[in-house]
Length: 70
Image (cartoon, rainbow, N blue to C red; front, side, top):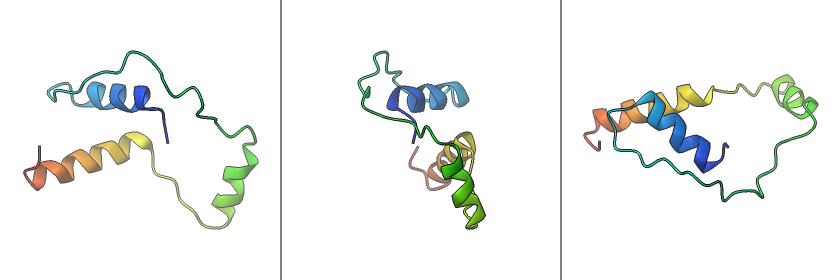
């Protein structure tokens, strides 16, 4: 999970036509990133497949548009 400041910025960049409020101040200083890259490798070895964050955003917005929610 990215921070909200990154999340809203990504949506605003991908979909400039949407009225997305950009968060200017990062209030999630407590969010910690994994320091050990081998933790992801363990999950991959177990068969977990990761989806790029931008792909997830695009798929979600497309789904919401198809349903007429945005």
